[in-house]
Image (cartoon, rainbow, N blue to C red; front, side, top):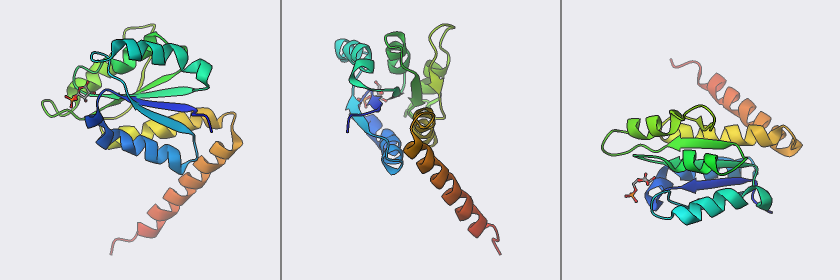
Length: 161
Ligand code: RP5
């Protein structure tokens, strides 16, 4: 099935974080693709990916990057699709650099920014699935079932002693 969510990341070193995005999309049955595309190492590939994604059937792009994380913003500048940015936890500044680089977009080019690391990677997938679930009943249903399952898990763990 053709991918509806494009998951891209600046480096293979981001996969440890971004695999949680792909796992969550797979759990929900959202067709996706995952690619390494770097803003500074492969800028031409980044532009062609952003320019061609919509015509290929992609509906949402999730972009993970760390450090001077310009990938989500640059992709957002070249596509009409919604872009969700995942700040990868960097070694030097624990991801604060990634977070600020992604979240502080000037007015006019939005990047929906999630939390640093695994939590953000999972939430990016859930957010993309919610957008697709607006018009796709099976994805909407999968999200509802996941929500109910999580609620049940917490209820079962309620009594600690
Ligand atoms: C960014 O630089 C990537 O998104 C990655 O988080 C960071 C470090 O990349 P590597 O040096 O590990 O390839 O472009």
